[in-house]
Amino acid sequence: MDRDLELAKRLAEAVGRAGGRVYYVGGWVRDRLLGRENKDIDLEVHGVTPEALTAILETLGEPVTKGASFGVMGLRHSELDIAMPRSERATGRGHKDFAVFVDPFLGEEKAAMRRDFTINAMMENVLTGEVLDFFGGLEDLAAGRIRHVNDESFAEDPLRVFRAAQFAARFRFVIAEETRALSAGMDVAALAGERVMGELEKALLKAERPSIFFEELRRMGQLSRWFPEAEALIGVPQPPRHHPEGDVWRHTMQVLDEAAALREEAKEPLWLLLTALCHDFGKAVTTEEIGGKLHAYGHETEGLALVKAFVTRLTGETKLRQYVLNLTELHMRPNMMAAQGAKAKGFMALFDRAVCPEDLLLLAKADFLGRQGGEAAREALAAEYEPTEQALREMLALYRERMAQPGLQGRDLIEAGIAPGPVFHEALEYAHKLQLAGLGRDEQLRQTLGYIRKRR
Image 1 (cartoon, rainbow, N blue to C red):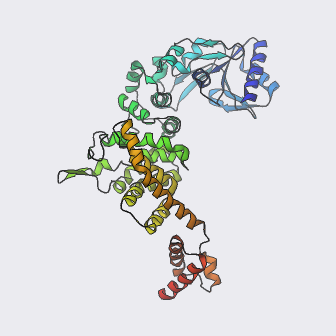
Image 2 (spheres, rainbow, N blue to C red):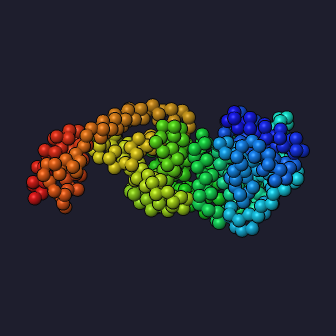
Image 3 (cartoon, rainbow, N blue to C red):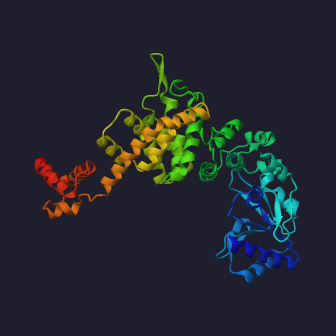
C-alpha cells in the first residue's frame, strides 16, 4: 500500500504540473476518516485531458485499462484505480445499462454529485490533504447516517438499495428516512443476481451484525424479490419454551449474527453465513400446532428446495450450493446427537456425510446460541453449551484422527487378487466404514476380503 500511496503522490504532482488535480475519492476517504483500513485506493483526476493523463501514466509505469466502459485505468503492478470525472445516465433497467460520459472539466461538485451516499462523496486532495465535502458527508459520518446525495441519480441505480443496507450493517449506521423512503419505491427486479450477491457478501463478511442488512431491507419493503424465503419466516411462531426470542425471523437473525462471530474459525466463512440464513427456511412450510404444541417436523429436509431456489437465484457456484444444502440438512444433528448421548459410530457417520464437519459444528453452535432474549441470556446459553461443544469437538478430533490413517484403496484389492467388478465399489464402501470404526488398513483388508467372499 505504501508504494501505491507514493505512486498516487507522484501522479498528483505530475498532473499538478499539467494544470490538473488528483483526489482520493469514495471509500478510501470515508474509511480514513473513520479510522478503518481500506486497501482499495480510488483516485479521480480533474483538469487534464484523457490523452494527457495517459501520457503522464506512461512516465510512471505501464498503464492498464480496468474498466473500459467506465474510463477506469491503472498501472501494472499497482492496485490504484484511476478515473476521470464522469456522468452516467441509465439507458435500461437494472444495474446493467448506462451511458457514461467522461468529462475531465466537469468540476469537483458535479463529479461528486453522481456518487451514491454523502459519506462516499467526499474528496481528499492527494497533495494538500484538503477534504472537499459538498453534501454534508462529514456531518453524516459523525452522526452515523447513510444519506443519498441526489434523488435522480440515486434512483437510476436500484443496486443502491442493497448498498444502503450493507453500509448500514457494516458501519452500524442508520439509513436516513428520506433515503429509506426513496429506496422503498425502487424496482430491484431487473438486477443481476451476482450484483445482489456482491452486496450481500460484503454484509455477511464485513459486518459484526449482518442481520442489520436484512432488517433494513425489511423496513424498506425490499425483501420480497431477492429474499422471499427469508421474508416468509416473519411471523412464523416457535415454542416459547425453546425460543424465547420470538418468531423464526428473529431466531434466524440471531443465528446469523452468532455465525458472524464465528466466521474467523470457519473453513468457508461466506458459505457458513449463507447457511445460517437458510437453515430454517423449511419452518415456513412445516410449522404446525399438534396437541397444543408447535412443531416443525422435518423442516431441515423440507426446506431444501427453498434453499436451492434461493442460492441458485444469487449464484451459479455449484460447490457453494452443495455446501449450503448439505449443512442445512444436517444442522440439527450435532446438538441432538450430543443431547441423546450418541456413540462414536453415529458421530463418525455424521461427520462423513458433512461436506465440512468443522463448519457444521460452528453452525450448530450458532443455532443453539441464536435463541436468547438478551445479553445475560446469551451468556447463560454460552455457558450451558460449553460441555456440548467440548464433546462435539472431541468426536470431530477422533474422526479426523481416523481419517488420517491409511485407508484401503482399490489397488490393495487388486493386489489381493480381486478383479474390478460389480462388487468392487461396494467393497470399498464397506472398507471405508471399517476405517471410520478405527480399524487399520490390514484389518480393513482382511474383513473386506471376507465380505467379498460372502457376497459371492
